[in-house]
Image 1: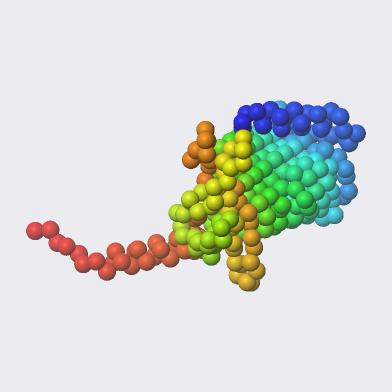
Image 2: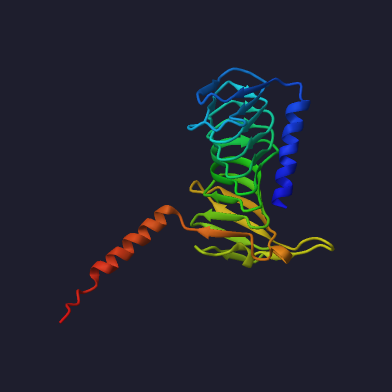
Length: 272
């Protein structure tokens, strides 16, 4: 399924470039290019060019673009502005999104990575596949989808739906998390909990079964956020997708300090 979707994503990208009336700009010189004015162009980074370090793009207020495609070792920093189309990452490219507004979907494939620390999606979301990864800590998006050995790490931010398929892994970081299944049974989450064991099993006729529920998060300011989750890891993909709770780094540090203090209090046993 992952390879099939990868091919589809590539074909759609080619169709987008070939059929659009938008101008296409290729940056493949290994330099840095800053977009700070309005432009409805498609920007393509390091297509068929493996620069090391890769070509770098920066999008800042009040700039805007139509679409962004990144390949090979290219990088992009989006701290403001608008992207009216899609953002698609391939190969080992990395995009950091700390601000801005996004009106199309974001796709992460191969071993590419997107780091989201801000910004807002309108009616769209982020999808990772085929070893792509998403690191989401702040900002807003409609959904996060993952399959085909993708990895998601989320420690914050707002998203209404988290949906994962075969071989995808989600690391859910936090200490104040709960799960409510479809029968309204609530469980306070602890590090190491797997959400497939806490969700409600659902299967429509002729469809692959899944585990569903709602992740409830309470932020430091008291805001309560609900995220619906769906885990498809049954049938031929049984046990291959999972959402696992990971403790906050500060909690890990405290546990480490506590363990060190206990070790220090143990008496030294001399060998005779």
